[in-house]
Length: 174
Image (cartoon, rainbow, N blue to C red; front, side, top):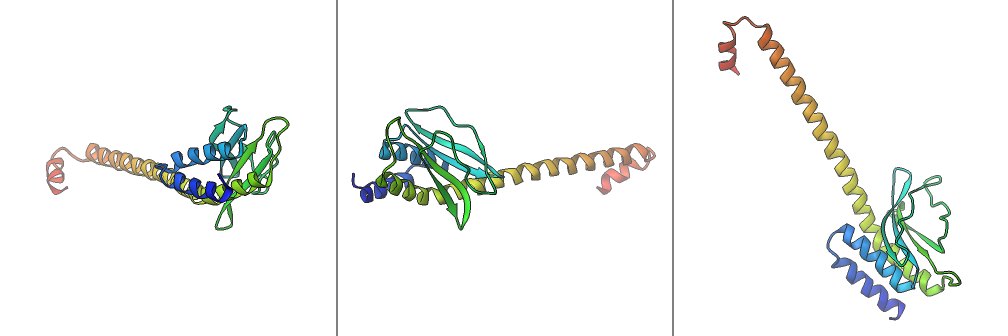
């Protein structure tokens, strides 16, 4: 496929992939197949750490998370090309390629990875928001449980401290 046709095909494939996780896996697969890379990785940036989110290609070992340097991409070992993925100017992830020994990165590979990075930006930004939302939901549930526990303790303490004759009237009042 010509690079422009491949990018259009990639965009359509990402749209029909069904969910952000599946679309990121599809993006890594398309990147590996489109460039002939030994490995293509979609990285997710959050809280100063770059974490592999989807890996494709012949080398299936998932790379270890990498600490961001000043909020920017560090040099990644054994990677021929790294393209930052930005959404509204903020680093949300990266795409990386590892080529086979003796193979280099050409201009077509660079262009494809840049185009896929543009497509992945919204997916990674969405994944980031979903992750934050999940964290907030856990905090909310934990807070709610603490409030219910405190309310139950207070009610039990009040019931224990009230004279027996006042409890039936209090029960009817609540």
